[in-house]
Length: 99
Image (spheres, rainbow, N blue to C red):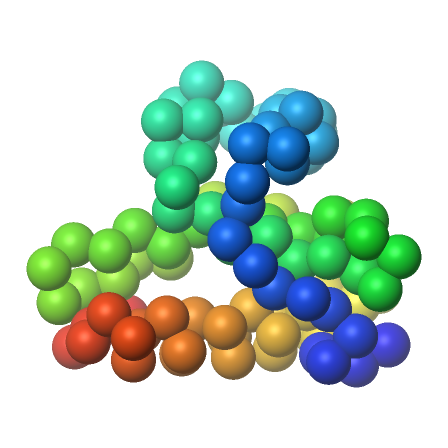
């Protein structure tokens, strides 16, 4: 699988049940992350399965990456590359100075 095999998109409410499971498995606080739901980017496989999630908090000209979860560690490098490409696009679109 390559980075192009993942579709990175903004999280939707339909993703919330699956995200709650991921957060619990990763020992994250689901209630805290639900409040930051609009900051999340989701990586999907070609089969439509969630392969990972990553948060990006945008504050003025700065972006802070948080709450990374990767399901399949074998594809970790490729998934991080796909997330990085998406984050660069978001940073440019929001005019971020620092990420």
